[in-house]
Every structure is written in structure tokens, then in C-alpha cells.
Image 1 (cartoon, rainbow, N blue to C red):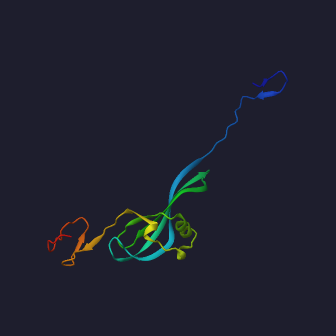
Image 2: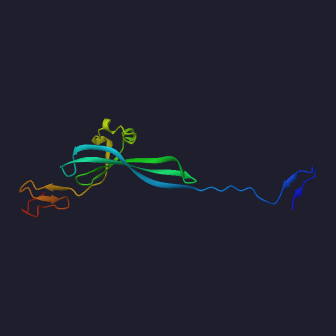
Image 3: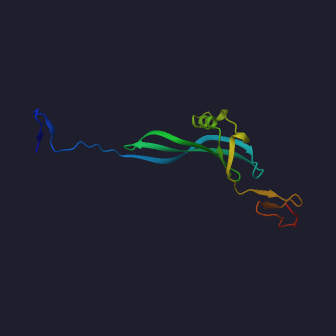
Length: 142
């Protein structure tokens, strides 16, 4: 049934005008090409920083349109301690493949998770985890 107003113009033919969208937000992780040799401040062993980026992606009809909420992380290879890279410029340089120009300093990092760190007893040299207050080998206070 078609409705017609007084000016003889067609108002509607009973069918609605609808649009169909498929949109979504996903969270992804990307390994970055960045490896910096370090002396770990957690376990005092030699290792390296390996970095990655976590971000959210808005997609429309399964086509990613833009990334947002980017966060950059550095993980140590020796004890798996995890750091947030606070300096966004250094993170963006790593993302663009310019990691060879980036050197992470203590002021650029925020410790998120302390890895399996072990330290040495000052008396006998026995490897002791951080949860001990006394050396299990010689009994001295740590």
C-alpha cells in the first residue's frame, strides 16, 4: 500500500530504509624488532630487552580502520621482568623500525612485573630468591 499526500507525492511504499554494519574492537599484540643488551637490575645478569606493543583496533566489515590505545613494553630475556615503556616517542621509533637509535634508560621504564630474580648471599655466595630473609645455606641475614 502506498501513501500519497495532498500534493500527490509518494510518502512511503511500506519498505523501510535500513543499513547493516559489522564493527568491532579487538586487542592485539605485535613483536617489535628491538633487542638491547643490558645488565639486568633485577637479577644482575646479562640479558637483553625484547619489546612488543599492545593496542586496540577498530574494524568495520572486518577491515581494520585505525589503532588506538597503544602501549609499549620491554621484557628481559634473563629473568622475564616486564617493564612499561613510559616514553611514547621511543616506543613509536621502535614501531617504525628505528630501534637501532633507541636506548632505554631507567627513567623511560616502569617495572610492572618482577621476574624470577635470584640474588647471591654476601657471606657464602649461595643463590637465594628474593622471598628469603636469611640464607638457607649459611643462615646469615640477607
